[in-house]
Image (cartoon, rainbow, N blue to C red):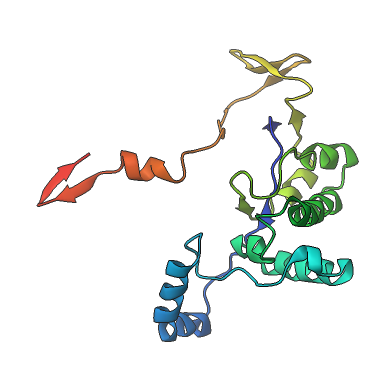
Amino acid sequence: MFQRTANYSVPARNVPLTPEFKQHVKRNAAEIRAITHETYNGMGFKVEERKAIETSPEERETIYEAAWERGGLQFRATFQDMLISKEANDTAADFIKRKIRSIVKDPRTAAILSNIDHPYAAKRPPIDTDYFETYNRPNVSLVDLKATPIERITEAGIRTTETEYPLDIIVFATGFDAMTGPLLRGWIFVGGTVRR
């Protein structure tokens, strides 16, 4: 894995939908839809009223731990002030960085992955399935491109300022246009005619 910029990630905790959950959604569809129209992020959950900076460190840790275990984008809705106060955001950022360092067994790799230079959710806040755990596998290693930048792509793989890494396949995951991209590049149907 060649990392240019470290980022936060929270577990997705995706699971098969239970019959009970499906029934809950059907029974509460109108309320869930209303919530998506009321919230600033269009998600089916509200941002909590409590403030991180007004919550004791012990209680805040318990709340963050529960949000981590629940997973998903709701983590960013844990405290009302998380996305508007740097002081509050620092509490979330610190929690996630500590989680990274506790999950990733190699201290050097954990340090690179948790060396994040921006507030939590200032960039797209990804959710994952075992992303940080993957770095504990013997066949996965991390290259810090801030320390050893890529010089070029070669016939054999990738050459950094330090060494050449032989590769069979290179997957470029340099970001994507998540919001306007699909809207501006999508096809629409107008009066039975397909238009771009």
